[in-house]
Length: 303
Image (cartoon, rainbow, N blue to C red):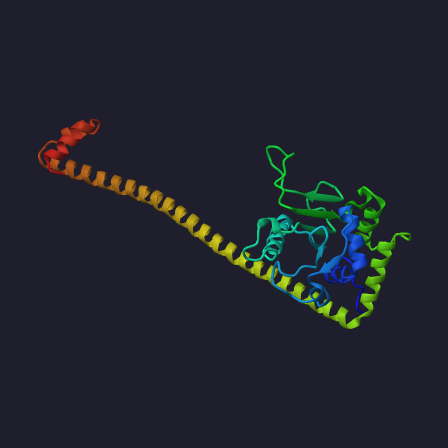
């Protein structure tokens, strides 16, 4: 039996928020202000699950009286969430101005990431990011763009009951009995789960993504092992060459010393023989303790 798809699935999230009343309630609860009418810019996309290019598929993208708003469900932790926000912002902005338009025509924009994890790690239920001056945080760049990151794991610390109920539903699927918005979201989730053809397509996409992720991990492990083997081999060769050079030098020194001693003995034996032939055996005995005299005699006899 196919398991129930929850609101934390990005396809389910997009489908449920395609209901204008639910989307408006969600946005007003998160942003704390009225948003007015909603015009969806990607309704077909969120209703038809598909694997698309990175940064192109938006869960919910709508135009409101506040500006354009992108809402994304993020159920899996991402260490690079800040760069994802930046990339989504660039993707949105690139389509908001026609050629020759004034910069004043660039609509205000909001990106909301609903996360089932605490990305910044400060334990806050809501993080709102604006472009502030580092030297004077009271000064804002006034870009007209705002990023909001929800942390469902900090639902208990939410500033109001409505936001707390919403975050608890995202995290655990629990429905506050008197919360009309969350109840409507849960009812829409149940209705979507009855659409078996849609559920099957979501599961297919999920399986494809999981397979691609597993393949990427396996490929990364294989590449890592190969790189590790290559690095280990290079390190081993380097160590071997170093040890070989050291051993070679040691053996060379030992052989040199041995050859030197043998040569010295042979020269002394030849000198003793020459002195004996010349009747100078006593000289041989007397110079053995005098290295200078030995060298002189060796030169004398050409040894």
